[in-house]
Length: 259
Image (cartoon, rainbow, N blue to C red; front, side, top):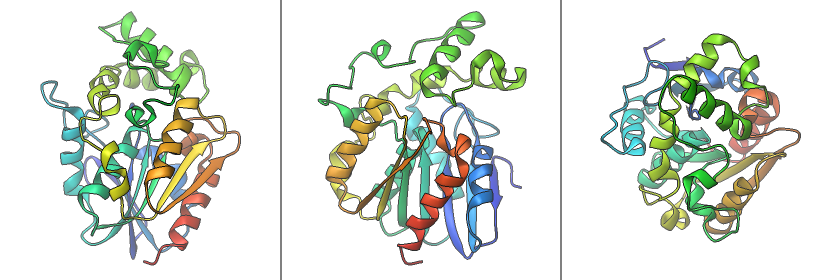
């Protein structure tokens, strides 16, 4: 395993898997184990996560993450799969290199700017569920606890293993660092949704937050070729809590797109 990237399978079809905030590439292990053979899955750690590149607080986080993903792209055409913040990166790849991205799977993409005008969007960061600034120590723990109430797996923060709590709390500042991309669309993704050429699967947990439904409604209305899937009983962390049905939906999508 190359530092900062997990790889499962040996091809011949390549998938790039981009994880959510406060996680790392290994978060795709469950989904990878449920996908059919004939695939090679590449899951890099994004900036500030796992053993990925360090975060530069001066630069736009989305720009940094996008640039850091590029060296891990499969050599030829590939299918892009992203979850949450990772889904916004996968969307950016599909827009920037339509000749390379064969298909696109977006699992609960948190591109809040796409929900603007829907009634579920708040222009104030503190008004979006589970968001808030963190300084250090107890403040970081409290901010992480609050964030996970809305965007976690359903498990109570204090019941998680100590190392997992520490890992997430140490990175909670990256949630605020993502604001320009997610709320203000610093990468200019929303105006270009109609330019997505890749067949796109839009996936959400059956118990997703209303803002996710609004985001997917916007994407379904504007991205030319979309399929929508809901994972019954799942919340935001469906790739971890419901790996088998998520993998089944991805596999079905891949089967409809020529290699």
